[in-house]
Image (cartoon, rainbow, N blue to C red):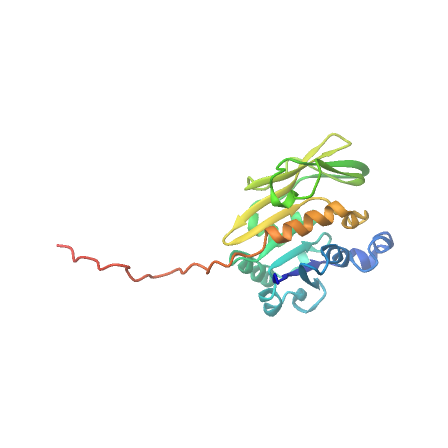
Length: 244
């Protein structure tokens, strides 16, 4: 039997508490919709939110997490720098990280990217069409040529991120903008996927194709079984001849 991946879905869980429109779309929280979309056949799913002790991201929780999902928006600044560093170290040592929508401005994503991660945006209930531009990539498995949303928030270029290792998805918006909506990166031994759609007032995380992408991404970002490299002073592998 294949061992199930251990996934933790992290969410601010603030919009759901303060905005009735968001609560009506995600009554159990955005994190619950994401986790339910992954299912239990291949994943053991746990949840963590901003207001939990240590934001729910204790050393023990992170050590039991193969892949971490991150959704944040209105309270990036409330995330403790200590917890950000804790997550950062786990990514470098192999934990996968899936950053969603407005998580582009999260402390952890900006720390990993080393750039402002800024972009253009607009809320106008406009159509979005996400094109698969790397059809052979495992994250795009089972997805057609494109995904279409009748209404989503617009993100537009320039997106101030480093050049992605791989570009999997590109968005077009009704207002004319385009955006790199599915980007992969590697940092240390960890794999990172940024996925654009998921504004809190739209039911994006119920979309079957979005759920398939998130499931694919979690499996793609799973940690390697390779031993973590040894650093520091090293003894020679062979005898070193005395000089002179």
